[in-house]
Amino acid sequence: MSVVLLIIAKTFPKNIQGLREWALSVLVIALALPLFIARDVIPDLFSIVLANLMLLAAFMLMNAGTRKFSGVPPRANRNLLFWFVLVYVSLFVWFTYIQPNAGIRLAILSLFTLVVILDHLVLALKALPKTTGRHFMVFALGVLVGSRVLRLGGLMLGFEPPTGIFDDTTSQLFYMALPSVMVPLGTVSFIMLASEKLHRDLEFISRHDGLTQCLNKQSAIEELQREVSRAKRHGNKLSIMLIDLDKFKDINDTHGHLAGDKVLVDFAKKTKISLRDTDRLTRFGGDEFMAILPDTDLEHALLVADRLHEAGKTSQPIAWSVSIGASAWLDADDSLAAMLNRADKALYQSKTLGRGQTQAL
Image (cartoon, rainbow, N blue to C red; front, side, top):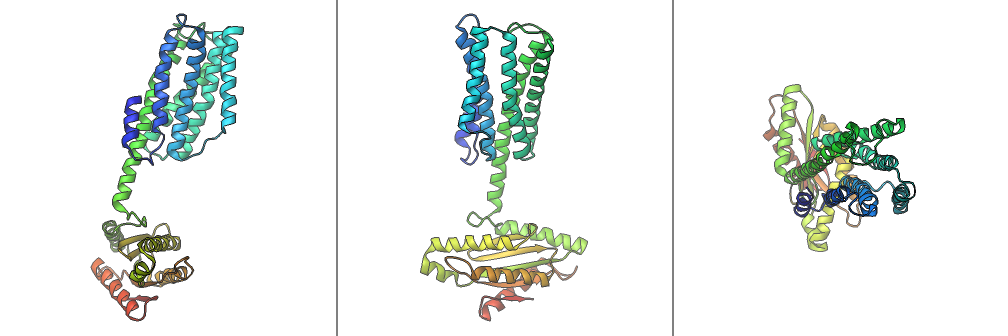
């Protein structure tokens, strides 16, 4: 699994983060297992203290990987993490060499990993998208949290107190077997999360303009066709605005194409602020845009157009202006082609009458 994760980390886009931390975490667990198996063959410093430290480090790496993936900063600073690990190691050293006690060591392992895994579970519930990968991760983490709570409860009540990690009691076998199922399941869930994000990103790229992050022309027509179908079926209102940035070629010639790109980005950003969440801004190409306004009549579409004209006047460092042609869905006998044609004619009128204004047909 570590090798698979490292390969995925190398091939996936850099914006999908956390894969290396998860790869390292499962590698650390794999390296810790031989140390546990070599108990009584190698020094306790390696088979007990170091092996248990590696388990805690592995769960902390998983937590860090999920935080990187979701873009959530660490909950604790490095100093606090250092003291957390130092106390953990110190307790293991004490109950290995000063007051040897396998039961207390298991309680320490359960308690400290419970803190890390519980924090991981809360993070997954709050920060991850509600996808199949997230559901599997929540299930795996939830089972690990529950098993540690039961382990701590059993130790406090004196239920089958262990004398070592490889006791053949039912409870110890259960606690040993559970992580060997849940940790791989959690790892698979993270691979699923990364794949789901890659799929979403590719879908976004295929539907949006790379510069302005607006819908591209093909996706815009698909959205508009859906809105027209809704208007026909339910009698909903629908308006569109065709928008041209005035004298955009002059901006490119005077200030350069990079400045022109910044104007396009600024226009798209300010326009999206003026629109509702249900509205769609699309880039038809070059300096041509279209705004799709569901559940909006022509009168309210003109109010939106006024806001765009005002936004352009205050833009820095290069002010821009737009010519707008607006049209609205008329009735069941109307068509998408006719509505687009009216908006195009209205846009032509705006440009002919001096630009920087809105006409509606």
